[in-house]
Length: 252
Ligand SMILES: Nc1ncnc2c1ncn2[C@@H]1O[C@H](COP(=O)(O)OP(=O)(O)OP(=O)(O)O)[C@@H](O)[C@H]1O
Image (spheres, helix red, strand yellow):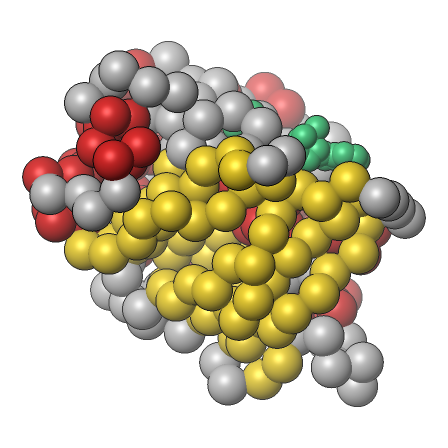
């Protein structure tokens, strides 16, 4: 389970996200939608402290992941990111073999047993539907895979660390329609086992795959959530007039 309380994010003096109180239920897909530049990626990155990597970024408010405050300085960012995995718009496999893409981080987290490592590799590659396609070339470079295969490998790499939450920032937008449909089906297949947050510009995709929607909108220079709730309610009967116009395709 992941939630925020009055979360604001700044880059230097500029506020990018303002006062966001949000809740993503466990075992469901929550879509984050809204026009370009309204703080969706910033919001997502603040949830597993990826914003710590940007020197000018500063957070106010609270992010709670599995009942713990992520800003708690006693909690290591590495452990937080193990439990809150992140998938980016552009597939970003490491320039190494398919096998090592999966095993590197698992080894770094202490697993050294070769048989266990191979078992994890097979299991997560099966989870993302890639095992049969790559089982005979696990030592080939991951960069030889197609874009869609690379994205599924990146999802498998995140799953190998046994996260409970997956953050996905436009995971299908760099893929062709067939690869995008495969990754979308994969995301749906994962939802019972993981809490998934997905930023998407594709409203049809948000409606197809999500259980809940949160809509961001730029207000006075910073992104705020103006509408959130169950997907069908938000799409068919939004409360906020801007959300109604946005979903009707006349705004944003
Ligand atoms: N590293 C950064 N340093 C300074 N400003 C940033 C940084 N990253 C994002 N911003 C600014 O924060 C605001 C929100 O950007 P963000 O990328 O979070 O929006 P978004 O809704 O995800 O946009 P898009 O849909 O186009 O990806 C923008 O004004 C952007 O220019």
